[in-house]
Structure formats: structure tokens, C-alpha cells
Image 1 (cartoon, rainbow, N blue to C red):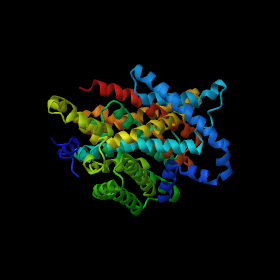
Image 2 (image 1 turned 180 degrees about the vertical axis):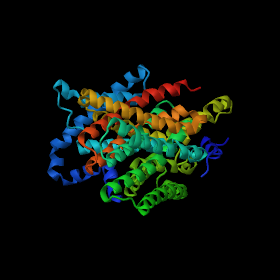
Image 3 (image 1 turned 45 degrees about the vertical axis):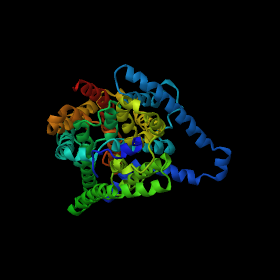
Image 4 (image 1 turned 90 degrees about the horizontal axis):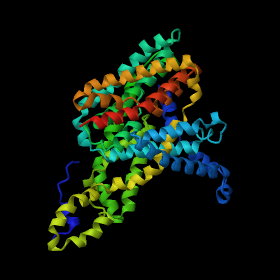
Length: 475
């Protein structure tokens, strides 16, 4: 009788193989300061236990346990765990209103910010690992239309309709930056909802993921063009072309070259150590390296992490050891009388073998990912909602922001236009970065910045429950 391992390896695997403004944009997202901070600390601080590091340990302990407690509560009332983590962040970030100021310094802490950035990178790496590039190619045309429409419609609405109507008398450049902020999309929150509900394999999820990559590239083009217009009064076609060229070079090159290298690197590394530690190191290191490379190329690091996840098809990793559970069960299935049991267990064991690299990364996500969502919620300052005029303008811009993305869903009606449209709604950290660049250039004042922050918060908070409701109604 053939061994279970050999039979699994014989299975037919189903899938074959303004630059200144951009630097400011992605430097904020990358947040590499913590490494410099740690290097700058004296060795004695580490030997004796630095008070700064110790405080971070307590913050992380509180965030992790509180997130684990909030997430099940959110699930029990019918909303995704990610919304529970976001709302937890809102609560912790506004305890100062009740006289408890202990958590107010967490959002500005570079170490916590770096861990949160790692969280969203790990999340997009997980999503990439669970996505097959062949499936993305199948929805490529729809994703292109959705991504393009998801940029153009909200930009036009923000810069030329909602902005002048709700905020009359502002400079043209302020309206342009407002439109650019409305055009942003943060795929991390939507991806988490799809993943929590087991819907990553649906056509709608694949369209949203593909459109998010296109959206990021076009969003960078708009941001660079608007920033250049503010700084120099003109936009160079060469500059825009260079941005697009870098994006295409990174995405095409990393995926094409990476998928050529991955089978050979896996085989070579498995010869050195075929155990799970080497497989884990290869996948995680690839995710971090491509996230860094994306940041260097002027893209979001999360796009690099997502691209890294697409490299590791299960068939590329067949030289590594099968999971321990498979090796332990295999001897028990050699008895000829257990043929019926073999037929029942085979699909389960094949699934464990093919997806073991995904299961290895999952515990890392348990640690890092909640920090990102809690920290995102902590950016919410409830005091900004106290001014009725500001709140009214923010609600108007939020409506325009949602409408602009829902328009993009028209191009994916067969896959679920409402689901795709709402999947593109969250602005998250990307919208905050766009607004920050405008404030740094002196185009966005404090009043407009507060309005944009409220819009980002509302689009981020409202999407998970709406998307969950739509997905649960889907047959």
C-alpha cells in the first residue's frame, strides 16, 4: 500500500504555476522608527529592563486580552470580530473623557505603531496565501473596472461636487486633496471580514482584492499629481508615468519572478531543513521582504505582503515535511480493513498538507492583527462629534465617499455589485495618510482635517456590519 504522503504528492494540484509626496505618504505607513528607537537605547536599558519597553509590554497585554474579550461579544450580537476590535479602540482612545488618561499616549507610541503596521502586513500576507493567482486573473477585467471606477467616482464627487457644496469658499487645491482622500481604499478591514466569514474564495472577494491593488496604484498617481500641483503649480506627465511604471514593475516583476523562484528556493531550503520552522521562515521572510520592497517602490507595504502570499502555491511546498498530524495518522491507515476510513480521512489530511503554511502564519496574526484594528479605533476622537456643523459636513462627505465606491460595484453586478461596492468603502489608514500629506503641505487646515478624520472613521466602522449582513444574505 502506498504511503499517505506519497499519495498526497501525486495529487493533481489545481493551480499551476511628486516622488517627495510619495515618500511622505508611505514613510508614515511603514513606520520604521521603532527599530531606530530600540537601537538608540543603551544596552543597560535592555539588561535592567527599560521603563519604556516595560510600558509597551503592559499596553500590548491589555490590548490583546481586551480584543479577545470584545471579539466574541461582537460575534454573539451578529457583527464581525473586527468591529469589536475597532470599537474597543474607540473606547480605550476616549477614556480621557471619563478622566482616565492612561491610554492617550498609545496611538503616538512608535513601537505600538510598528507592531500595528506588522499586523496589517501579516493580515494581507494571510489573505494572499489563501488566494490563488489563477482566480484573480479570472476576475481581472472586472477588478480593473471596479478599481478604476472606485478612484474616479469618489474623486470627482469630493473635488467637484460635495466639497464645493458643503465647504464653499475653499481653495481649489483643498478640494483636490479632499477628492484624493475620498478616493483612497483600505483593503485590510474588508479582507478581514471576508476571511472571518470564510468568503475569501468568492468572486466578489477576488474582485475586491484585485481592485484594491489597482486602486492603490491609481490613488498614488492622483496623490502625486495633486501634491505636485500644490508644490510646483503643474503636473508632469513624466512623473505620473514613472509612478505607474514603478507600480507595474513591482507587481508584475515580484509575482512573475517570485513564482519562478519559489519552487526552487523551497526545494533548496527543504534539503537543508524540511521541518516546519524552515517553511515558516521562508513564507514570513518573503512577506516582510516584499512589504519592504513595495514601500521602497512607493507602494503600500500591504500590497507587497499580499503579493508575497500569492507566490506560495501548495504544489511549490511539497518538498517540506507533511504536518505532524498526517505523519501520526498515516501508520494507522495501512490496515486493509480501514479502507472506508481512508476515504473519509483523505480529504481532511490533504487539506492539512496543502494549507500547513497558512496554518503556521495564523498564530502570528492572533498577536499582531488585533493591535492594528484596536489602534485604528483609537484614532477616533469623539470630541470632534460634539460640533453639529462639523458633524453635518462630515456626514455629507461620508455619504459622498460611500456613494463613490458603490458606483464602482456596478461593474461587478454578476459577482454581487453591492458586496463589491461596500468592500471598497473603508478608507482606514490609507485615507488618514492622504489627509496627513495634505495637512503637511498646508492645503488642509485643522477644520477640514477633522472632517476628513470623521469620514475615515465612519467609513471604517460602518463597513464591517453592512458587509457582514450582505454576505450572510448571499446564497
